[in-house]
Amino acid sequence: MKKDIAIMADPDTVTGFMLGGIKSGFPVHNEDEAKTTLKQLVDDNYSIIITTEHIGDELREDITKYTNSTALPMIIEVPDKSGSHKRETDPMNELIKRVIGVEMVK
Image 1 (spheres, rainbow, N blue to C red):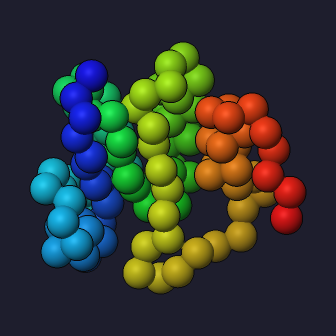
Image 2 (image 1 turned 135 degrees about the vertical axis):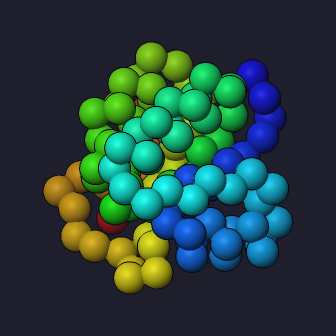
Image 3 (image 1 turned 135 degrees about the horizontal axis):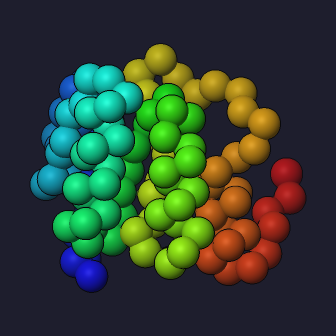
């Protein structure tokens, strides 16, 4: 498994993360492109893949498939430039619960 981090998001978010030091950035423009890129990043053995909440919602089935079977890659969803939005479940809370076995209480 690579020890690399990749960002897969809209072009503005990718640019921001790359300015912050992430070396591998993959801008996507639609759901099909995001799905193909996510599969490629998993196949390329990136250990951490950062994406936006919007893309995460579009690719929920794929993300669940990749993250339920192994600890890596860790797929982290962050707000995009339009900000965070309400969700029924919090993927970050679910990730923490799965990795350390403890549910975070608000």
